[in-house]
Amino acid sequence: MSRVALDAGARAFALARASGRRVDRGAPRDRRDARARASYAPRGEDEGGEEAGAGPSGAGDSPAFSLADVEATEDENALTTMLNRAIFVEDYELAGKASEKLKALQGMTDAREQLLDWRSLGLANWIASRAEDLGFRYPTAIQRRAALAMMTVNDIVISSQTGSGKTLAYLMPSVDGLNFVGRGMLQMVVIVPTRELVVQNCMLIWRILGGNVSKARPGDTANMYRYIGPRGVKVRGVFDMEKHVRNPDPDIAVAEIVVGTPEELRFLKLQGDLEVDLAQFLIADEADVLFEKHPEAMAELLKPSPYEPVMDDRCVCLSGVALSKELVKSCTEQKLMKDPIWITTGGGLRVPPGISHRMIVVKDRARKLIALTRQLRKDLEEAGQDSPPPRTFIFVPNSEAARVTAAPVRKALWGEHKLLMLLPEGIEALRVVQDFKDNKASILVCTAESERGLDMPNIQYIYSLDAPSTSSYLHRAGRCGRLGSTTPGVVTSVVSEDELKALKQAYVDLEINEVIELEELPAREFETEEETRQALLDDLFFLMETNADVVNSLEQIFDKSGDQDEDLYGEDADADEDDGD
Image: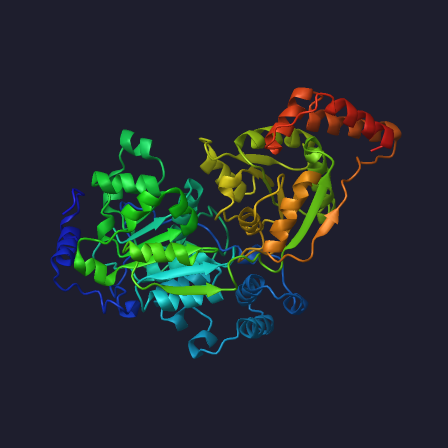
């Protein structure tokens, strides 16, 4: 057995599974009866774990939808959001229209699919009730199909467009299928590529299990006092190997659910600190990038358990936007999966249909920040003075580009937007993510490492300061227009003329046929010529730093060829003034 110290009950349970004795878990291939039937008493104040807190669905704070909104959209994510919001505010006419249109779009023929709520899929009352309190009473198409599959078969592949709700597609049925009688042993492992996704998944699982991150919200339906599910379930996140070596977390050994990055999870498994071989659910989110960058770690984590009873009941799930048949075939050949069933909707290489696409073509890369900032001001103006600044992501190629971008844009937009920067190696990365979720800033500058899975509420604008690949464009665009979002998504690419070909190729690959080409906006105009001229000088000072070295660094960062022009700043400044820009 493992070197992990299990309590007596958990050890007996693990030994029973490992020795082949029958454990009362229900039929191995039908998890509907495998859910624990124990009565859930409230947890005492001295018990540990991640099970209490706050975090409303936000349904009550969102703008109202109308019948016209239902008629105007063909976006399943938007319609599902409208349906959930309509039920929350008891607008049953709107709910009925949204439901009818969803059924028509999804071509439902299965009787079980006609009933859209989680209970109709066979999930336990407590988790269906919790879903309602959190604002996602009605599952999306991918969530319904995944839930049905995960309760009746072992291994599955979930492949669907960004923002369609894949995380809940695997979390809801897997949390529902956990055994809440045999406690203090690992039951579910979720593998993700970044630490931001570790925290994001941990927080979502924690909320499903009764947690609430809202400190004070009158009438909050997500509060812990409405929660009727299991108490004291321990959820742990793992993403810092050095921290674990310096100061091991003893609760990892007895956590029921662990979310982590592949190399760190592999380290804990090989050290004997994490009994992955006992887990009932092994889930790989963003599986394509996990196997591409960490093939050995993934093979170690997903390899067959030496305990045959565990394998009889184990579910391995791969989730992603566009998982290849070659990847799944490789997993089956390595015996990491067995006869997986594919769950797909809508095709992977497709952005949500409700998103708009724009591009701004600049003369050279050094003008990107000016074009970006002026367009951000325009977006702010269109939002209206009474509206908060629109929530915006700005994607750049790497950390150096993020630093060069964030400081001048922050200065130029001082008093209009608050800006945060998310770096993959930043020690404050998790705090940055939480601060942005808490609306302490309206712009987040981030790198390619944040393209996948980063789920923030109501992101309206996505900007790219490079020509992203097809895959990058797909994942960046997927940060807006997500399930639950109440704002339309707009993706804007700011590119130079020599990057235009690559951008257009991404449009072709993703079948994006309608793109608005915006011209670079002129400087702001004020009542007096002096104020207008000062605004122009401010833009030039902040965004080009009156320093040829900084301009040249922009050229190097946004141009892989590294071409430079020593006189670039002077020429641009003169041109701007002559044109009255």
